View 1 (cartoon, rainbow, N blue to C red):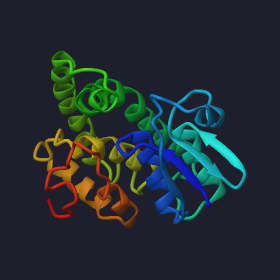
View 2: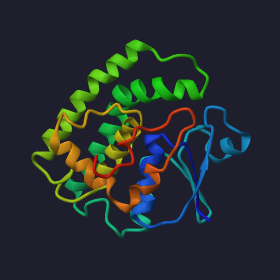
View 3: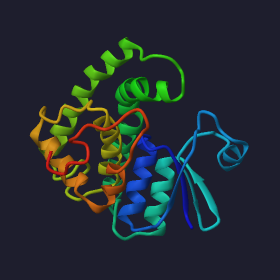
Length: 221
């Protein structure tokens, strides 16, 4: 059995989960307290980070590397364009969310509101929360600008870029930190992603002490 070591509200883990599910690859999910890693986990990934995917005798880490491996090993359905310019654009947008969005928004909202409590690291820093709440507006505006020109974030076909963005936004939606009324085009894009079969297990996630809002699992929110 393939096995994915993860935490439910990690956008990096969710990106891999979406990719696996879209390609219909069965995997056992194993929650891993990476902030208090066991010796076994550190042997699997000395960096001490999730996700870690064990598949066919391989142990793989780093979400982007895992997803691109899955795309090459299991090319159907396609999540990366075949042309070099298209692949560049997908990778650029993946990096935008995994680096810039993560640094400015995910780490300032999700990690302050949820991770600190789960990891027993104290109370949220109000300055960080305020900064994240301000910066998410900029990122939603950028997404709207892209989607006004394209059907999907990186072009006219759904790609790994859309899964990367949806992974981050779904974590924030779990704690009601996304203003879906800011741009109808962004909400419509998320509805399309959220309605895909690969998204179902994400909508069933539950974090003890942090129940999701009523709209979280609603496909017509």
